[in-house]
Structure formats: C-alpha cells, structure tokens
Length: 508
Ligand SMILES: C[S@@+](CC[C@H](N)C(=O)[O-])C[C@H]1O[C@@H](n2cnc3c(N)ncnc32)[C@H](O)[C@@H]1O
Image 1 (cartoon, protein in one colour):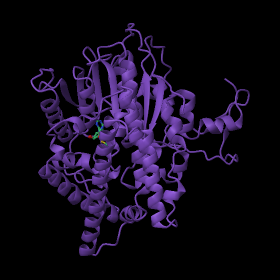
Image 2 (cartoon, rainbow, N blue to C red):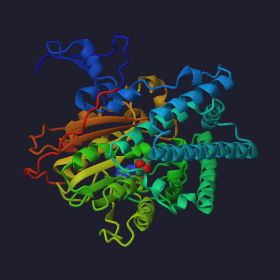
Image 3 (cartoon, helix red, strand yellow):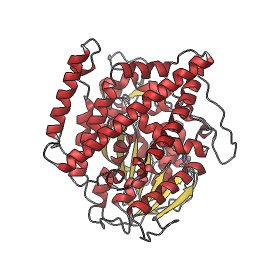
Image 4 (cartoon, rainbow, N blue to C red):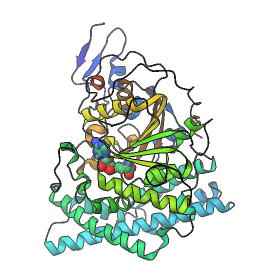
C-alpha cells in the first residue's frame, strides 16, 4: 500500500464537506493529486459522475434557475408578470399544449393542482400566524421564510414545478410510464368538494401546530414507546404531530408534503419508475412474474403509480409504522376499486400487494427474494450508520441481477447554486439531513455489494439505481458486512441476464 498523507485544511478554495461518517481527505502521492483527493471527498453530486451513468435530467437540473426577469424582487411586478406569462407561453408551445389534447389536459390538470396547493400553503401560513398572535408567540423563522416566498410571488417553487412537469410529461410521451391515474380516473374523490374540504381542514390544523412547534424549536415527544422502534425513529420529524405513529399523522402526510412542494411531489416520486422501465424491458408489460419490495412505503402513494403501470406485479409494501401501512392499504384498495375493479390480483386484499411491518435495517424476508427493491425518501431520515445497514439489507433481499432504486433529496453538488441553503431543510427537525447531503451513495452502495447504475435528477429529488451483480465478488470486510443484522449471504446462483441499460440521452 502506498504511503498516505492526511490533509487537514485544504487550501484549494474548494470546500471539503464531510458527513457524519466521512473519512479524512487522504492523498496517495504516487497515484493521486491533491486536487483529485479533494474532489473525491467533496460533494456527492460531483462524485456521482464517477460512479453512475448520467441521465439527461442531471445536466438539465444542474444549472436550472429562475430567470432574473422573474425572480428579481426589484423588478416591477407588471414586468415580472409579463415575463412569467411569456415563459409560460413559450413552455406551453414547446410542450405542444396548443396542438395536443393530451398535453393540454396534462398541463391544465397540473397547473390547477399546483395552484390549489399554493393557496393551501398560504392558508396554512395565515392560520399559523393567527394562532401565534392569539398565543402571543413571536413570528417564527419558517413562517417568515414562507411569507417572504409568497410575497416574492412563489416564483422559485412555481418554476421548479413547471420544469418538473416538463420532465414528467416527457416521460409520459416517451411511454416510460402512464399519465397519473388520478388525473385520468372519472369520479376520483379528489374532485369531491367534501373530500377536498376535509383534507384541507386537516392540513391547515396540522400546519398551524407544526409551525408553532418549529417556532418553539422543541419537538414533542412521541406518545408511543416500544422496543420495536429504534430511538432515532421516535422523533417527530418535520415537527409533525405524533411523528410516524398515529392515524392523524398518516392521513395528513400526503397533503402536507404536496403543499410543501407546490404539487410536484408526485411527479418527483414518479421518476423512480424511469430506471424500473429499463429493467422491465423484455418482461411482461403488466408486471406479471416480477416481485418488488418497497421499503418505507409511507402512505403507499408511490405504490399506486407503480401498480397502475404494472398491475400484475407482486408487490410488498414495508414500513415500520402500522398507521402508515394502514393508510397505504386504504390507498391501494381505493386504487384497485377505481382502476382494476373485479380483478383478483392476489396479495392481502386482491390488489396484488402484501404488507410488512419491518425496519429497513432488518427486513424479515429471505435472501435473494425480490427482483426489484425501491425506497423513496427514507435515507435522509436515517443516522449514517443505519444507512449502511439498510443498504446491505436491501442488497441481501435482492436477487442476483436485481435492481435497487433509491429516490431521495438532492445532495451537495447536485445543483450547486442551491448548496448554500440546502442544509436549512434540516431545521425542520431533520437531525440526519446534514450528514445525508454529504453522503457518498456510490461508495455506500458498492460497500453493500451493488454496482452503481444510473442517476437522475428531478427538481429537489435525485434517483440512484444500482444492480446486484449476477456473480457476487467476495466482499472485502466493510462496515456494511460487519453490521449485517441477518441473512446468510449464500453463494449466488446466476439469475437471468440483466435487462438492457437505461438510455442515457444527451442533454439538448
Ligand atoms: C419521509 S416518509 C416517506 C414515505 C414514502 N416513501 C413517501 O415517499 O411518501 C418516511 C417513512 O419511512 C418510515 N421509516 C422511517 N424509518 C424507517 C425504518 N428504519 N424502517 C422502515 N421504515 C421507516 C416512516 O414510518 C415513514 O412512513
């Protein structure tokens, strides 16, 4: 092994960022320059380029920003409105809105949806403000930030949503996945004024409570104690009422997150389907014969899009919270009633879905039992050492040749303009977010015995896919191996050939 030097304070001008578990910057003099070493240990968004194939969306989002003609608050409002209108018209023309009824329907639906969530966000902030004036509490930082965003015309989030819809619709046009099922389903409950009113009232009540807790800077205790739940889990993430452990929390979760992202959360989650489509090439289009596990499914919202695209896929939805699993079950039943009535798809309720209460770090399923494992928005909530164990577990239950898709927040270096503010999301009682944004997932997946595949970006989210090799190399002793909670790691048998790779389209 060559001699190595540890550099404590680099003077290259490039910041070195380390997560909770990052190694010190080590230069191996005969193989590597100092600059290379700093780069290697810097932002994960940059390191990804060495590990993952880059989907066109990576370059699309890398430098994406709102033009100053729209975002600059010193520009007079009429000029800004004109610039917004011009941008929207251009975008609409590019998307074929004026020539295709499908595009017009997609954009009409999504703009209505985003407007609804914008109004709802404003109602939440106003309710929090009214509550704090009653209690005499000082105006809180998040409230102030949201208010200033609203006063600035929500230009940033609106532009993010529109660009996200561009990406989503492009996928739909290219038959990567279908139009969102709730958009195309007649009689969907989302159009019922009573359903909307109930959900909105729940949201506004929850937003006022959440913002008030944030104002106090002290999360509530979670009401339920059990040895089944690790300490880090018994946290009221986002200051939400009851953490992950109540029916109320589960029923308001979707509307809260969609409001936070101004309606683009579903579209971001759907990007998980992109690497899956490539994997499914050559398999039955309805998903028959494919077994999939979703770890930390939450309310199962993503799973409804998955099932709508692959109704015969054998799906297991896992989570630690029985309340969220119950909400997921309701969502899946509703999906099946609306989209596959009378079809016996198997699983727990004829929906082709089974439910599993299990932690990501000890998935109570045999080795090599799933073709696909997906996990959406979990890793940023895990302590660094648990991330490793969870990834090793996902790799263990995956069959050789199987696909892992992890979707989560963007990290440092993915959209460098946002780096300075990225960690502020952690203010929302996200204790592991700061280490998450500097975690090198390429390295982490390799340590878990996986091969990195493709990276996508999707506004505030990123999607990383990796594959379990057909032939497992003898793993070096790693943290992930030593922390393995269960599973025998039996010698791999050759599975079927890997499906062809996802196409990497050059950025236009
Ligand atoms: C941020 S939510 C994401 C839910 C869903 N995937 C989504 O995208 O809407 C996190 C979910 O992960 C679950 N969770 C958190 N830690 C977990 C763990 N260690 N094992 C299993 N589930 C966990 C929570 O119960 C919650 O449902």
